[in-house]
Image (cartoon, rainbow over all chains, first blue to last red; front, side):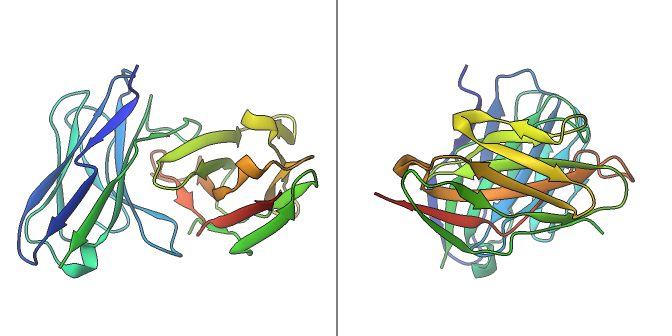
Length: 114
Length: 116
């Protein structure tokens, strides 16, 4: 099992450009999450999908959209990138969106917006 | 609101010595607590979690953590540190109260450096 995979690993964008970050999991998990990691701030939740067909906003959703394409895949889209979106983005998944469930993380996508 | 505090940005310890990485939390409802480790340029790896039961939780790589409800703490410990333990450690909390749907609240992270 590959676990949680993310593409691309690294991306440089110019302000105003758009891009989609891809995430896939092969653990048959129902719930998926997108976080961003900024220095000294820990991880903050952008969006999550409790189950296929549902998505909800997290702590910092502005400037992002998501699509739960199927049970395996959950993408994050930046429609018009801004320098404030320079960050490391992590996708995670869990069996269910429940308090006791362990979330498993992908390797991350490093995004630089110039 | 739920929150996690990791009061130390950095912890330095000599190899072979015991290590402690501190975490305190604030939640409404029952807390469920997690520790994750992040090696350079890697994703977060799950170490251990406290859900209920025994306050001392044992996890991967010889780590353990003690849940203390009265002090709202969940400190990560290891009896004998290894140089390979050097990494960034995150404490996270969620709760059974409200509509969080498993949302994790992370601390800012503690950089552990183990010196040979």
